[in-house]
Image (cartoon, rainbow, N blue to C red):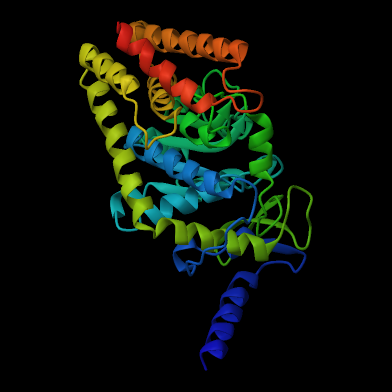
Amino acid sequence: MTSKFVILIFFSVFASFAQGLPQSYESYESRPDILTVTPHMHPNLVRNWDGIKWGHLEAIAQMIEMFPEHHIYFLARDGEQLYDFARLALAEEPKNRNRIHLLNVSRINKSSNHIEDYLAQEGISEATLSAGKKVLFVDTGIYGSIPYGISSKFPPELRENLQTKLLSSKDPGAPSTRVFLGYFDPNSPIVSTDMQGEIFALEELPRFTDRSTEYLKINDTWQAVSPRGSEEDGVVNRLIASKLQQDFAAFWHQPKTQAVFKQRRGIYRRFRELALNDDKAMFQKSAIEFLRTVDSKAAVWFHRAVVEDVLDILVKNFHFPTKGFSKIFHALKKQELAVHAAVRKREAEKLQGPGQFNLNQTGRNSCKAVFLKSTP
C-alpha cells in the first residue's frame, strides 16, 4: 500500500507540472525540495565530495550573517546545492528561511522575452527595488556575467540594491568565498581565489535537468524549462543527483555539522557587529587576534580566509574604505611573506626528505611565528 501511495503521489505531482507544459520540455520545478528528501549517506559520490559539503557549510554561514538584510538568490543550476544547504540549515528559522531563493537564470534564458516576468514573480522588480529590497546574487563564478546581466535590466539608480557574491571571482566588484575554496587545497596555508578549474568541475556535478532555455507559464506560474532528454550543458543524471541530495541531507543532520555551523555563524556575526558599530580600532584588533589564533581543530588556512573574506565583503559590497583596515592588510601581508619564506627554507633544506614536506605544519608554524614576534 505504501509503495502504491508514493507512486500515486509522484504521478499526481508530475501531472500538475505537465499541465500546460509541452511534451518536448521539462520544468526545473520537477527538482525535489531538499526538505522532502530522505537523508541517506552515499560516500565517495564525486571527487572531494566531503570537502565540497564542508565548503557549502562555510559559505552559507558567512552569507547569512554578513548579509542579514538581503534576500539571497542562489543562481541555478550551479548554485542549487548552496540553496539546498541553506534551506536545510534555516528550516527552523522562518525569518531567515524566507530570505533564501533559488533563481534559474542561465546564459540562454536570460535573453528570454519573459525573464522580467519571471524575475518579478520571484520578487525582483522595479517596484520591490524602489521600495528598498536588497538582493544578493550568489553564483559559483567566475566573472559574474549572469548577475550583471540581470542587473542591467534595471535603471542605474536601482542597481546598488543588486549585489553579487561568487565562490571564485575574477570580477573586481564581486568578492570570492575563500572559506569555500580552501577545501579544494586544504594543506595550503593561503587560499588562492584563482580556482577556475575547480569551479568548472563543481559546475559539472550531475543535475536533474539540463540548462534552462526558456520561461513558460504553467498553471499561472512562470517556470524555467529545458528540452526534455537533452544534455547540452553539464551532466544530467537524476539518479546521482538524487543521491547527492540524500547525502547532503544526511550531512546536515549530523550533530557535528550543526555545531560547527552555529559556531561559524557566531564568528561572522561578531565581525559584522564590530564593523557596523564603526569602531575600527576594535574591529582591527579583533581581526588580528583572530589571525593569531592557531587552532589545531581548524584547517591551517581557515582563520586567514575568514578575515580576507570579511574584508572583501566590507570593501566590495558595503563600500567601506580600505584605509580603515590598514593594520589588518599589513598583518595579512606580513603573514604571507612569512609563510612563503618558511616554505622556501623548508624546500631548500629538505629536512624531511623527498615527498615528505609537511606544508600544513609549515604554514601553521609560520603563521603562528609571525604574530608571536610582533603584531601591528
